[in-house]
Length: 488
Image (tube, rainbow, N blue to C red):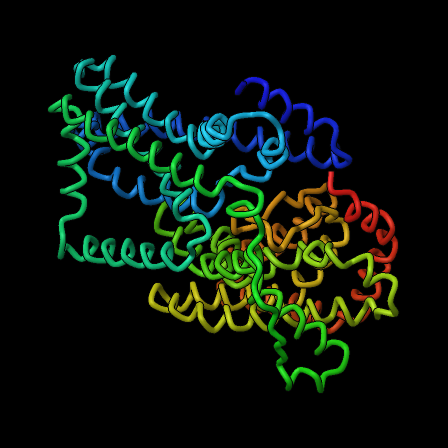
């Protein structure tokens, strides 16, 4: 039966009206997966030989020490991005198929996701290297099984957390607090991690604990999903009493203020848009990557980080205009909606959040004023230039977004298209190149001024650029309407 389900999903992919977009996304996803596969395999080899040859320690012990961090990161990634495939199961509920089979299929399908098996490549490679370097097979095999079981437990934890954002946020804060206690050596978190995970190697029988946990959580997840596996209960969209909200002071800004008002309501009310806000907040800490690799300390990469730190909301929200309005976009196009005012409202909202991000990013002063002024210049470039190019790329995004979907929080299907890819040149590559070159020849002050000037030029010519953007939105109007009407 499981094979029949997979065969049907394969057919549905090729029968959809959006086959071209789906195929492109699949190809890009495959390239991304292959890239991460290579990185993880190479990372395992580098880690093993670096620990063994350079610092002369036990690689299995050292990796065990940091596995608690890997486990938490894996849980976070699965919570944010891994989907619970309930939508694909709904059509089968009216057929003569046992619900137990459907629930088990849904649970098993989560293990086919790249988020589930990609991390295993690191540990498979690491375990093979350990075996070839004299480590005990009867120790490495339980160690690998124990780690795999604990990582796969996150699939079940993700299901329990799905839709329980308050609980997930509370546990996230607890993890952050525990991390801080470990960082300041108040609690030896890494030492505990080493003791627990290395015990799988030293005492192979301990591996029975994660195996029993895995079986128990599968059973509990099965019962949890089986209880809600009805079209008129657990899988039905939640209904709440409608509330009228209005941010009064925005009304004095006319049509633009009305559109901004509507967008703020949308961001506050819907699951997907709440994910955009969460993702934007997370991007504020993207600059901390500068301490993970020497590569991130180059001028070009610092500018790259600055663009994301200050423009996270812009990139996540702007390139999905008008996809966020896909449910009522056809109706809107039958009305006398001023396109320019509609887009200006999005533009102002993005730039207000970008301005707030620039202020919040002040904590990067702790790492040096040079870092912050670079991020400040990147923020000005985002306001003056990238905000408009991001809106421009939205004209070619014809992927529907269901705002009440149970899919994961940072968005649904990707909005990849070739035009959006080409627009990355002025959005990312141009400021990175200009900043790096000017800094090399004239210093940090001139580099920051050059990026700020580019932002100012874009801001001054915004009306002319908006005329071009509006023209493209009108040109793509009918193909966008057709795409939004066809859900395949």
